[in-house]
Amino acid sequence: MRLSRRRFAALAAALVAAALPSGNGAQAEDRAILVTSSPIEQFDPKSDDGRTGALRFIGGFRYSGSDSRLEGVSAFRLVGGRTRFLAVTDTGYWFAGDIVRDAEGRPTGFASTAIAPILSSEGLPQTRRKGLADAEGLAIDGDRVLVSFEQKHRISAYADPRAPFDRKAGPVKQPIPLGEMRTNQGIETIAVAPEGTPGGARTVIVTEQSLDADRNIFAAILGPKGGIFKVKREEPWSVTDGAFMPGGDLLLLERRYQGFGRIGMRIRRIDGTAIRPGALVDGPVLMEAATAQEIDNMEGMDVSVAPDGTTIVSLISDDNGSFFQRNLYLEFALEGAGPS
Image 1 (cartoon, rainbow, N blue to C red):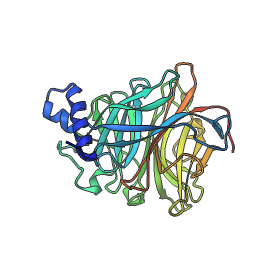
Image 2 (image 1 turned 180 degrees about the horizontal axis):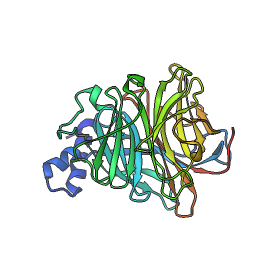
Image 3 (image 1 turned 90 degrees about the vertical axis):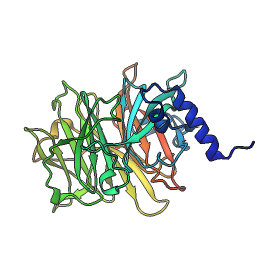
Image 4 (image 1 turned 45 degrees about the vertical axis):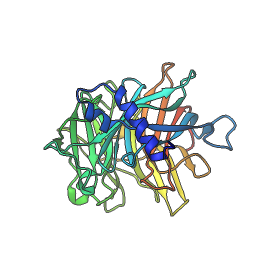
C-alpha cells in the first residue's frame, strides 16, 4: 500500500513516541513529533571564511515537523549543556528535544522531539485562544522556566526546565505598566545574567516595540531592586530576543521587516554594567544579515560556551505557519568586535 506524506509522517511520529519514556503511553504518543532536517552548508555565499561581522558560521539546518503544531517557534534555550533545547511557540506550545551534532560539533538536526501545550495557572491548555497563547520570550532561571506572553501581557513561571510540560503557570511581577505595552509588541525577551558577572545576576526583560515618548524601547530589571530602563531604538529595527554573554554583556537580536522579501536581522551588544533602572542603553552591532544570507524571520537566540571556551550564538526562526517561510537553526562563533 502506498502511504501519503501525511500518513507516513504520522506513522513515523508514532514510532518515535514508542521510544519515549513516559508514565502515560497515550500522552507520549500525542506529544511525539517527527522532525526532519536538511543541512545549511554556507550562511553567506560572499564570505570565504564564513564570517559575517563578528560572527563565524559554524553550521545549521532547515527543519520541519510531522504535524501543524510545529509552527511559530518564537524563543528557545539550551539546557543540559548544549545537548538539549527547550522552546516555546506563539501558538501556545512547548517544543523540546536533543540537538544532533556531527564529529566536528556542527549541528545537523533535532532528535527525540516532543511538543505539548503550555498550561495556564489552572492547568489548562491555552492553545485555542491566541490572546492567551502568544508566548514570545523564554529564559531558564535556576530551577524554573520563565515565559513571557504578548497580547495578554504577562510573565509566567514553570517548574523544572528539563520537563515543564505538565507544570502549571505561576505569576511573575514585572514593573512596566500594562498601559505602555503595545498589543502585539510586548515582552519579547527574557534573559538571565550569569552569577559573578560585573552587573550581577539579574533577570532582564525587553519589549519588541513598546516605545516611550522619545521612541525608545521599554525594558526592565525584575525583582525588588529592579526597575524600568530603556533601549535606544533605531528605525526600522525591532527586538525579537536577547541573551547574556558569559562576561555579562547582553546580546539583542533584532529584526527588520519592510515588506515581502525585504527582511533583515542584526545582533547588537549592550554593556551589561550600563543596564540599571533609569538608564538608556545602546551598543555596537556585531553582525547584520539580509535575504542574501541564509536567514528568515529570526525570532530566537541563545548564547552558550563550547568545550574549547568559544562563545557560541545560536539562532532560530519563526515560520509563522507560512508556506513561504522556513524553520532555521543556526550556530555562530563570536570572533572579535565586529562592525559598529
